[in-house]
Length: 68
Image (cartoon, rainbow, N blue to C red; front, side):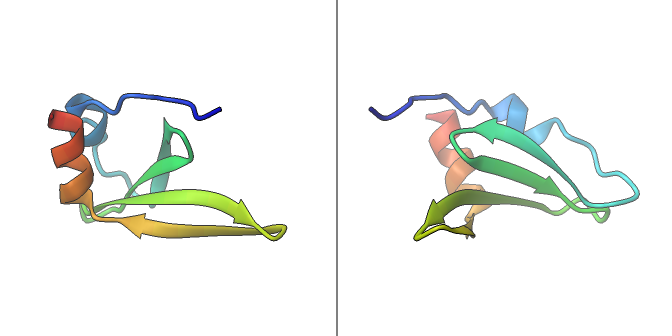
């Protein structure tokens, strides 16, 4: 059964940049990576055929979904 979670605007906009890139788990396999220059990237982590994989989500699209 699928798990439902809600991403809020505050979760996406609140993390400040630090000296090194760090990640914040948002739930459902989605992580927000914050780079030292302030750039934010969302990545979805999943596993297929025993291999761990991830792909980037467009931050603006994720923000749009969170606001709706």
